[in-house]
Amino acid sequence: MRGHTEMKAEVVAMDAEHLDMEAIQKAGKILKEGGLVAFPTETVYGLGGNALDPKASMKIYAAMKEAVDGQVNVKVT
Image 1 (cartoon, one colour):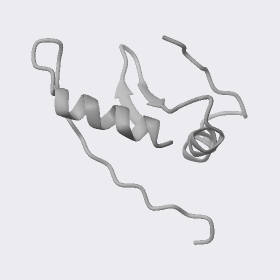
Image 2 (cartoon, one colour; image 1 turned 45 degrees about the vertical axis):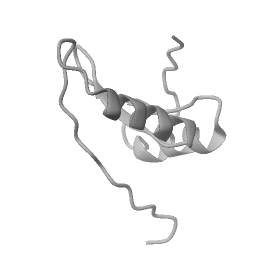
Image 3 (cartoon, one colour; image 1 turned 135 degrees about the vertical axis):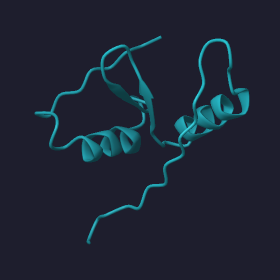
Image 4 (cartoon, helix red, strand yellow; image 1 turned 90 degrees about the horizontal axis):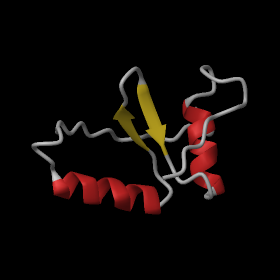
């Protein structure tokens, strides 16, 4: 499929009492390199990426193209 990018997924389970620091560092590296990470929230799953990186933003739009109408929420922390 033209324009299709294969993505790998890795599932890591943790909670506030059992943090996987290696996985957290890996997620940070993925974000810094323009990749995406998914994470659970209280109600839905979030898809995270660097909103200031145009390539990462395009990956978010591509991953969510059927779920959004061209708008995404940006959370700054």
